[in-house]
Amino acid sequence: MLAFHNQKLDIIGKGAYGAVYKGKHIATGHVVALKIINLDTADDDVDDIQKEVSLLKRLMIQGGIDASKEQGSGAATPGSGSGADWNHYGVPNVIKYYGCWTEGPKVWIVMELAEGGSVRTLARASPLTEMQICLISREVLNALAFLHKNGVIHRDIKAANILVTSAPNRVLLCDFGVSALLPSQSAKRTTFVGTPYWMAPEVISKGRSYDFKADIWSFGITMLEMALGEPPMMGQTAAMALSLIPKSSAPRLQGEWSQEMKEFVASALQENPDERLPAEKLLDLHWVKQTSRSSLSELNDLLVNLEEWKHKGNQRISLAPGVGAPLGDDM
Image (cartoon, rainbow, N blue to C red):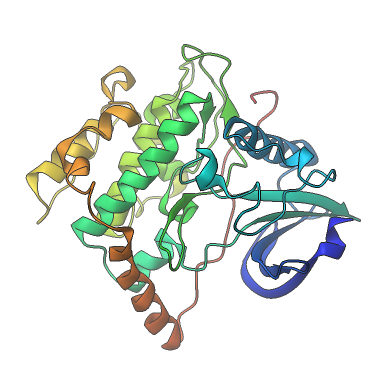
């Protein structure tokens, strides 16, 4: 059983569904994240959890890794040089998945540990510079370009679901609990799912369908969140935000940011999904391309600031799932 291969260490975060712990793969000593979901209290049901695991396995296979062949137990071995080292297999900027098992009413999911924490927590510790936002945006777009090419809509893009690792610095997209698969590039979905303040107008509006471009809107809102500290309408209740978003003009970045950055955000936040640039086109814009020679080590200042912030008595934000309707048969 996989439980015998992993040791639970310190708690990282807590949510309504359970908790995430720092853990260790006993055979290799590799540090991992252990996501433990209590099915007795979780909002997610077994089907939703199975869908998340199945999606992560699918992405591994599309990236050239077949976890089922790694150990014959449905799990890849953590550690550099193993089949689970996604960066060597063309799966950019997506959290690594190692395996899962059940133990009574609990589901354990073994994943890569991002020591730095989420961009949401990093932004609370210290404001992000334009260069840091640009670097993070570039990496998230790499992830979205890969996901969308492989038929996956994430459906919950926000700073809390973007992780930064300590040396070497990497930016990783996580939490695929409400993601969906599209059978073709022209297919659409209608399920109401996501986190309200980041949701695209077409996802909220009854009678409308949506596709990959919904992620691009959420990415644009996340850029505003990184720049301004919170998404638009955060002062409203979630219900009020859901009512206002489809009726309101697309938000725009204001303040002392470069004009090029403001135009970049506007390219993602178009009310008409057809007018939003896809991830691969956004990557071609100069504002992002200018960082092509910039190292992610420039994000290390954020991690240093986070440690100082925690030493002053602050805590990392608890890991919590997105809000939304059940997936049903949408995946």
